[in-house]
Length: 76
Image 1: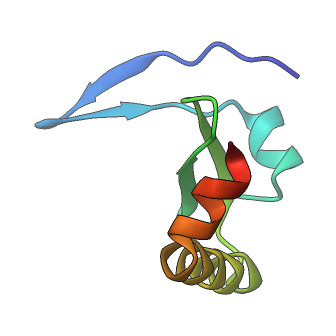
Image 2: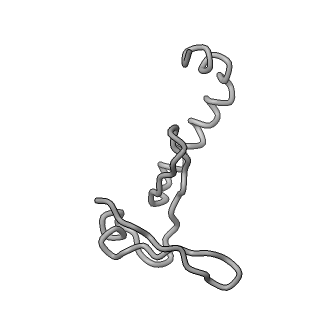
């Protein structure tokens, strides 16, 4: 599924309206929190906030920080 989203002014901020079909696919609704995370190719990914996801991201960030030099060498 590929959707075009339009940015709209909301007070002093900018917001995006997510179509109902996308919210249904993410099992999300008004008031839920979504996570915007950067992808390796420079893009972004939007995922619903789930406790396990937040925990996994915290572990991944910790590993990336502790083994930064090793990961850089492996990436060569």
